[in-house]
Length: 165
Image 1 (cartoon, helix red, strand yellow):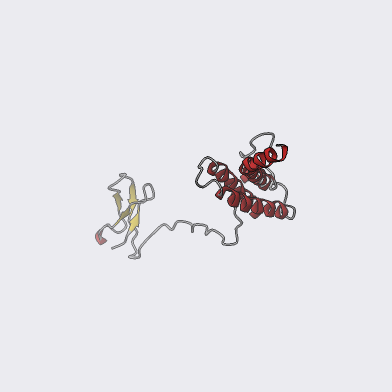
Image 2 (cartoon, helix red, strand yellow):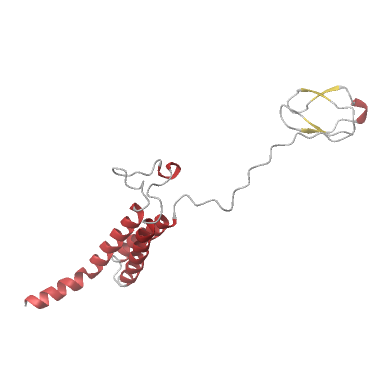
């Protein structure tokens, strides 16, 4: 018994052998199908799906990803300043983020300056910020420096008040 598929709806149909060479209707979409006379299975093969390449680069270069991690660490450090018990963790977290951001800035000098249009197409936030590779580490460094400054500000104020009195 040949197995055929409907060209209209792709439903698999198993007509009996005595209908070979005759027309049958698809039970799903009621299209007319001619049953082949040979007893081999007839399948319409779909084109093979493209396999993703293992060597394909991620959308953001490594320096931009380092900058994004640095930016997130700087933002978390600023949030940690609001919690009095863990505010000193902000120093370590923002210092580590600063190192990552500086590493991303150093690495961005060797990578291409512009991001691919597929990545930077809708990213440009203000005056094109976010379209260059070096923008992300720069934002991370700025966030970590701000967090370090805000963390050390009470100690700096205490030291200055001790010096002036």
